[in-house]
Amino acid sequence: MGNRRRAPERGRTKTKPAVIGGMIAVVVGGAGFGVYALYGGGAVADAGSSSGAEAVKSGPLSAAEVKSTATAFLTAWQSGDVEKAAAATNDATAARALLTGYGKEAYIEDVTLTAKKRTGDAVPFAVKGTVAYKTLTKPLAYESELTVVRRAKDGKPLVDWHAAVVHPELEDGDRLVTGEAGTPPVKALDRDGGELTTAKYPSLGTVLDGLREKYGKKAGGKAGVELRVVRAGSEDAKGSDAGTAKKSDASDKNPDKTLLELSKGTPGTVRTTLSPALQATAEEQVAAKSKASAVMIRPSTGEILAVANSGHGFNTAFQGSLAPGSTMKIVTASLLIDKGLASVNKEHPCPKYSTYGGWKFQNDDKFEIKGGTFKASFARSCNTAFISQAKKLSDDDLTKQAQQVFGLGMDNWAIGVPTFDGSVPVQSQAQKAASLIGQGGVRMNPLNMASVVATAKTGTFRQPYLVSPTVDDRTLAKGTRSLSADTQAQLKELLQYTAAAGTAAEAMAGLGPDFGAKTGSAEVDNQKKPNGWFTAWKGDLAAAGVVQQGGHGGETAGPIVAALLKAGS
Image (cartoon, rainbow, N blue to C red):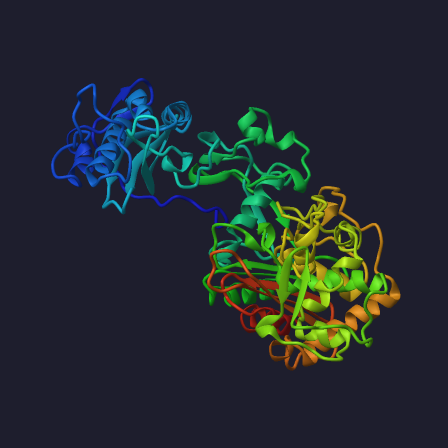
């Protein structure tokens, strides 16, 4: 299947195995060499004396302690001694369950573990084995890593247990299972009927996983035999039929993940709203950045036309939870206009500083606009123009505006795959003020912000979707009220002016006159550069993007969004 990501496959050493406890078939002779070779010919004994009066060890681990502990764990795991391997960790119960399941549920045999050069307290290692289920076998190979820590009560070095030690795709509580897949494969199609694969569109892996999870059985496919990650709390993990569970997208978690196919199933077919041309453009644009994501939608319908992430392991575009910075001022501006606290051409304060709730806020480079209008403040992204209004707002005003008008933060979007639907919590004091400029507790992703600018364009929230609701009779989320005609007109004017003459003008050059945009930069703790945001519309297209640790949104995310809008024109 072109749309499922797998662990890399390599050939295996043919050595006669002996099954111990029904769990792991042990590779004898040269098998242990991979573990011992790193450390010069043998496991190093635990450092220190065995005298009964020895003091509890503390402080950093020595190289000998890290090597000894890693060797003991890997050797026990490879030999099939689950109890001994689990005892070498700081969570023997969880380790015992997962290591036992490695053989009994995942059917992995002929295991060889080869330690590599340690880095501090971490020891990477290679895993080779064979998945053997009934008459089917297939080699398995992947890389993992363990970390050694010191137990507080007695100073003993132990492997810091997490499920990812066994396989990097596992999260704590997940399991490895081989058998008939819980869901059949799907053949996902773009809006024109072409097949969507990761070979064509590398960043669609998580999207295709989600489509399979939701539509595998509904699309009429037949399951194959796979080694897969069964997520904690999934219907498979509970032992029930995943296909019969009626879950909303809001309650979906990360879908189960196929690691290795032993036999292919027969896929069903599901058509998406993605445009092949725009998807290709989105992939190309984000690939130029180390950590970028983008989404394009059609404001008049909510159809998602493109989604892409430069990091392919997590779908930040749909599931990210990041402070959106000044792009949130679209929502805040609509609130201030609704309440009569701001108007496009009225004079509006933009001082260098504004204090609220004990925090002193400032503008980028401490600029000020003397005698300027709200339109000027919005276009230049003046923080203090918004912070100065905090004292006139109730703690829940922004939350209500985001939920009722823009459909955010209700956890009820049903786009066809899992999403994070934004969060605008009720906050007070300084955090309330920070929320007005997209900081504080506000969290969004490019899908959310593309929807925000689309709502500003049309006046009514239309929930984005990737699969038509007619396919499975889904109910799409709705706002409880639209923007008033006056507020919408003013909001569009603010966005148009920002695209023509404000912070978004350089990126949006040549795209007018039916356009609008907003830039954003979101400060993040321990980051040297802020995350750069940009959201815009042109005609009946809307897009948003984020470049993490990129700097100013107009310079980093702006060209990505503008390229998408140009491609769709």
